Image 1 (tube, rainbow, N blue to C red):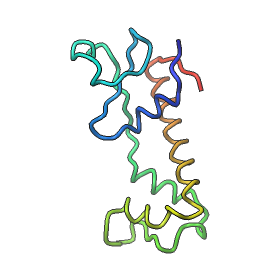
Image 2 (cartoon, helix red, strand yellow; image 1 turned 120 degrees about the horizontal axis):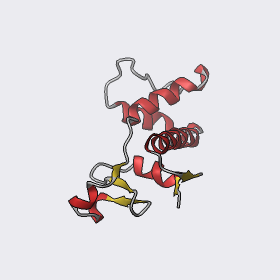
Image 3 (tube, rainbow, N blue to C red; image 1 turned 180 degrees about the horizontal axis):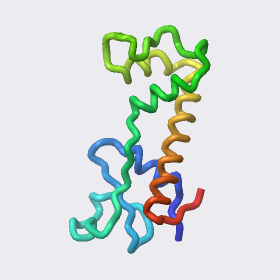
Length: 124
């Protein structure tokens, strides 16, 4: 039975401390915490190289120049955490939903690539 692509994408976005695996034996995604180390050894880790800060920067670069919030000096030497600067400038604006849609598309693409790379059958 194929796995749902959205489940793979959700596993890719798991917060620190939460690790998900694909179990070929069960043909599904499972939490690493639910398996013994011996069973984990027979599973594929679900992970990717996407970095949220890189995604934020790519999102801003995908926008027309006049749509980038003035309050956000991305990489321009602004003081503070880039993620916090991004959130302060984008959240609560018309760009917030565009950001979430963009981020979700990028994780869907990463999930699709992960499945293909590992020969895991999936459904959209």
